[in-house]
Length: 169
Image (cartoon, rainbow, N blue to C red; front, side, top):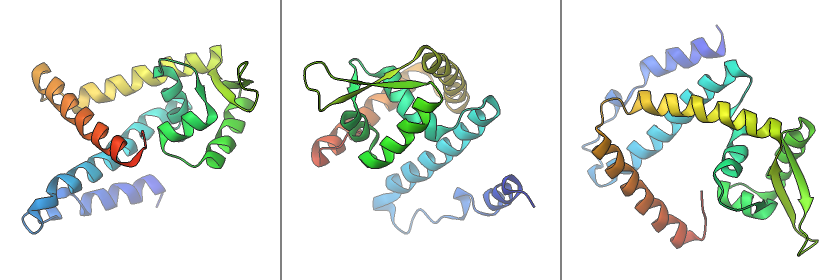
């Protein structure tokens, strides 16, 4: 049995229906968010893979894509919420594939700026299209007003967590 078949079997057996949300009603939102994050990432990774992309490699590139300013390695690690050494290893791979470059900051030579290459930007455009299609599919039942409210509420919760822990995810 392949990994995808096992994943499919497990997802058939263990759905949200098997969870008793009345037992811990005061943390039901926590369970929903945890499960949704896991399912969303899994689906996104499955959409990316046939196109030669993975969520692991696209994640730092996606943050570079949406950043208003160039990011240092440390800033990117903090933003993504990963250890700097893990990010450096991933950036080594991305740089080897010609998707990002690291440049020494002209103001502070200790800092390395991470920049997308033209090939990296091309992959980010593909990622954007695939992720946008998935998001549209997953939010089909929501009105534009509901989507905006949900986004605003998630932004508020993210800001609270970021401020509370000094972390931007």
